[in-house]
Amino acid sequence: MNIQGLICLISIGLFQSSVGTINSTFSQTEEIKTRVEKYKAKPLNDLQQEFLDLRFGMFIHFNIPTYGGDDWPDPQLSPMVFNPQKLDCNQWADAAVSAGMTYGCLTTKHHSGFCIWPTKTTSYNVMNSPFKRDVVREYVDAFRKKGLKVFLYYSILDTHHNIRPGWIKKENTQFIKDQLTELLTNYGEIACLVIDGWDAGWSRISYEDVSFEETYKLVKSLQPNCLISEHNAGKYPADELFYTDVKHYEQNAGQKISKETNKLPAQAGIPININWFWKETSPAEIVKKAKFLVEDNLIPLNNAHCNFILNVAPNRDGLIDSNAISELKEVGKLWKNPGPSAKLPSYKQPIIALNLARKQKMNSSWSADMDISDFANDDNFMTKWSSSPAVSNPYLEIVFDKEITFNAIGIVELAKGRNSPGDGKTRIESYTLQYWDGKEWKVINTPAISELVRIHRFKELRAEKVRLQVHGCKPGLAIAELMVYHEK
Image (cartoon, rainbow, N blue to C red; front, side, top):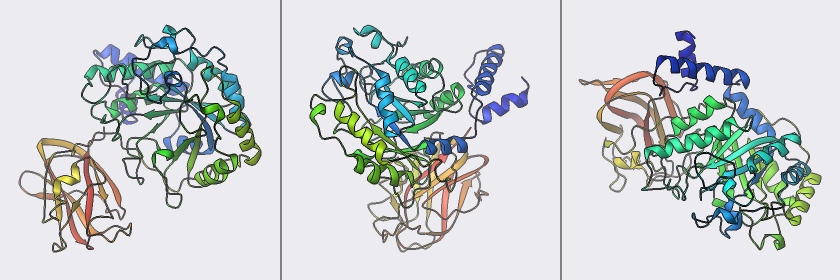
């Protein structure tokens, strides 16, 4: 392969640079090229539109928590409890078809770390249970047989293997990569990987602890058409694709999509029962009714560029309870798939690189006493730096420990700051982005954007300091985060 070919693969994030020799570089590149050709790699925009066209799918929370009594059971729970003696994934697929669903998504590994496929990475898996069958294989085969697309769910947080705050080691990233490699090479084409337990307030595993960029590029190198739907809508603003191809909203965790203003490809889900995993009370529960599922969720979500994923949890025998089966049939009577979804109004390039500005030193013009500059790079979109109303041309500056290479800057404006009227509108009227060349501030050549969330991309620069210089603004300026990236 020539140099142009190598550069092309790098540019689309499909080349993995950590190789030992020239021969292995070319060998790996040829493998990637083969996969790209095998899966007929499509533009991300087309994949996002196809994802929305699917409209409605079945989330299947089925794993060792099914037998533990809690959604997060004891992480040392013995594999011997996992024994779904009547497992029938064809029943799951039939139930999905009866509701008009177009895909399924199975919890291959949840937060307690048990793997329901015969992984080589750990003994904590289904082959060391009494069941000794590959549940992932039976699921993908059953759903494909019914013409349904296959998604997989995978949790980064893993309390059994100590992939949790305070315990994370470099080898944990390789462990995760090895498991994802198994899932994305042994089970045919996977349309979407739904990821959970990562950069969230409750999991506290950052995209630096476990590299998002490395993981994302691995997934795309194995399956170029596999979308990432990362559970991070509870943290990141709804206006940009931060660390995901699709915005995922866990509705019963309080993550609500704006049905009026959403412009990004999205996925939102709830369980048909009270809980995500099956409980002993589940068979007698009054499940969510078809009218509510269709009229209050499926239709309005679809109209907001959002795919609806409804969780249906199999029981300890490996079967879906009759109350859920019956209601899914009612959903199918009430709703008929209208075909392709409305076109997305705009397409965004996902941000996958690490935020280099996070917790670096900050300077600013005069700010509100309790909203000083370091709140603008604390990796928290609910805090902010607020400019003093007395300053007409405020600035916010990041000071790095050493000179860095960068080619993108993000600005997230918080319209509900202490001095803000909370009208959801930008307070910035004009601004420039600047960098310190060692002698003077120079302007970065990038067009201004008039939105609450702004992502500026430009040619690579090197600097020790970066500044947002506001030349005019309305009262109430509040910046939640000023971010700097090196997108490779």
